Amino acid sequence: MNTNSDVIITCAITGAIHTPTMSPYLPVTPEQIAEQAIDAAAAGAAIVHLHARDPEDGRPTPDPDVYRMFLPRIKETSDVVINITTGGGHGMTVEQRLVAPLNLEPEMCSLNMGSLNIGLFHLLPRYKTWKYDWEPEHLESTRDYIFKNTFKDIETIIERMGVGCGTRFEFECYEVGHLYTLAHFLEGGVLKPPLFVQTIFGLLGGIGADPENLLHMKRIADKLFGGDYLWSILAAGRHQLRLCTMGAAMGGNVRVGLEDNLYLAKGELAQSNAALVLRMREILEGLSLTIATPSEVRQRLQLKGKTAVGF
Image (cartoon, rainbow, N blue to C red; front, side, top):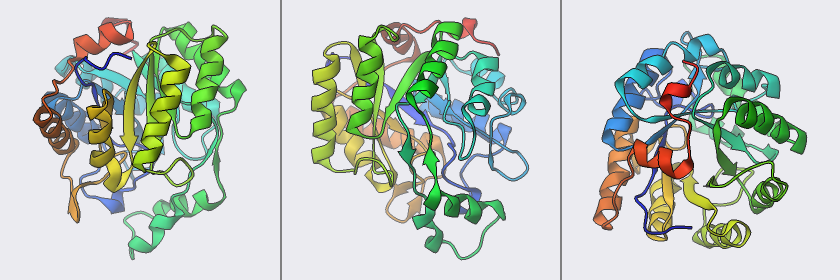
């Protein structure tokens, strides 16, 4: 892994975890998602990771027509690399999760490297009233929920998106076993380097947001992938800036954004995704690190280019 390259900032704009009640700044309409993605790119994000939301009530949707309400505007206004989820939202089947990516054929997609308990129910006591009825049900349902990504599911996504569409992946690894699963596909020749490995910390059900775990995940990734991968760090909530800073100082790339963290500081909601990107950029530049551009990312990850997408 090259530790001397410019740092790639990924910004995850809206996701499928946080709900509209949790922050008035969470983008949910196509206009809001487009504006915040464009502003995040202007602030220094080389990649924007995108989910779609129902414009009426903000719930996650796999509808490609909703994606088409904001993706062309982002593409036309910015050079940013567009990365679309294959994780979708809670309860979506693999086929539902792939409808939009297969229709849109983006440069990048996320790919969770295994099934996982994803717990959000512990957030319920923080809120006394809800903007929409679906929100508390959405959180409570995760008490008895598994995000399913079996070996067959992963094979399907790689075959249909990677081989079929020429899309490269952000490999999301929530625990050490996910790194070994990724190594299995690499060793079998199903995947080709370079890999963009997103190690994820602090989500209930995954590995904890401890510095020791960050070091351990990096050691295992180095052991398994050597120089064939680019390492990135994602940490949930209050852990975001702390672990991203630690990882960046070790040669890693970083992911920020309202999908993963709603706060700019303790008790202070981030008023935009761009605000989180700018805060991270200030830290990186304070460490004498430079920020990667979208064109650099396309070269380093061997992406097919923005003119080869389906939108």
